[in-house]
Image (cartoon, rainbow, N blue to C red; front, side, top):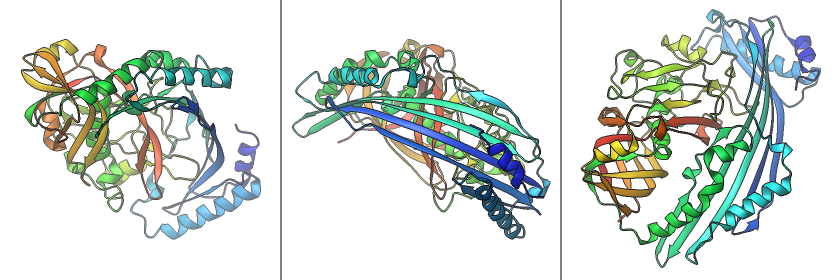
Amino acid sequence: MSDPIEAHFRQVVPAVDFCSLRLVSERSELLAVRQDVLQPVVTSEDRGAMLTVWDGGGMGYAATCDLSPSGLRQAVDEARQLARESAAHSVVDFSKIVMEPPKGDYASPEVEPWQNIPLANKIDLLQRECARLNIDPRIVDWDASLWHTDVESLYLTADGGRVHQSFRTLVPSLSATANDGPETQTRSFGGRGYCRQGGLEVLDHLGFRQAAPRIAEEAIQLLLAPNCPSGTMDVLLAPDQMILQIHESIGHPLELDRILGDERNYAGTSFVTPDMFGTYRYGSDLLNVTFDPTQPEAFASYGFDDDGQPAQHAYLIRNGILQRALGGLTSQVRADVPGVATSRACSWNRPPIDRMANLNLEPGDASLDAMIAAMQRGILMRTNCSWSIDDSRNKFQFGCEWGQLIEDGRLTTVVKKPNYRGISATFWRNLAMVGDRSTLEIMGTPFCGKGEPNQMIRVGHASPACLFTNVEVFGGE
């Protein structure tokens, strides 16, 4: 990974307050079988470096794929010039930020490495699972895929900092679409939310090899199901819907750069304000949300963020009270509020900004059966399929693939097109029961977008099933 890059970096480091290099090498491979036909194998490789300079109170950066001494020197010169030009206009005095030289390593756990399994074996697996989705003439589209990514990063600072990190991620997917006349329904493998770090052993942890027949059967079942009823009722959200609820109505509102207005022009602002930290009741006493990049198998785990800050487990919301922001070191200094090590970039040619990583809702003590038994009139919803939220991340409405009515403490009729809406500032205060560890699932998304130019980044979420009261539910009619 380092090659001669470290020696080249030392050659070009200028006399400035701070200088860093972030080298990223990424390789990905996507295998897919659709309607029992192998699709073209898609591979990509990318490698380059970002040079960052702080000088005279300003900050500048420049990226390059020319990793020779001359290429790095040109990038350093551009970054230093930008730092000087920005010094008189920056909202942050970078000369006052203390950056300790980081040192460490991180590597994803990997029991069954992707590259150790022949390509033919992986294709055979996908063809077999894809064929198992086609159980009925009403199944009109079906697919199975595996997306593997291998990322190596090296972070160097002029004062001796060195962090090397290796990430191996896997995103498996299954989907079946059924049609009968004007009605079409799709059922998927967790809404494509089963994302993990690791090798092919991840498939066994997630039950990938057992899921296809159930997914297809549920797609057929939805064809025959009535529409979800409308009204105010209790809602029991499964983990594969909870991750989207957490992501949109907790994760994005707590991003500190968004709170400070940096994203207003593109991805929106936040209903959260800096004075809320430490006092604001975000949810009921049962709401405990943590930032935890230290989970080995989670999708967005790391040892250090892309500014070289060490990652640590921290509560963002504790017993319902807002504690910390999702803000890296620069944003913390700027806003004077506590944050976490969450400056992240999607690649070498993007600067790190405040992003979610592993954002988890901590489990409670209720079993799934106990939550169902506690509901007189309500609905269980699984697997997100649509979402909409306003530009302050407050008012929202979400739709799910699967619904099942709960009446007098029992699961009854399956319903299709279940939707619900609410307001972030009050929805979480109606959290009435939190599932125990037996209901918890570790999931994520590879497609969280933010920033100009846009950055699509990997985010991890873990959540148990959760019961909310007084939720406005509506169907698809």
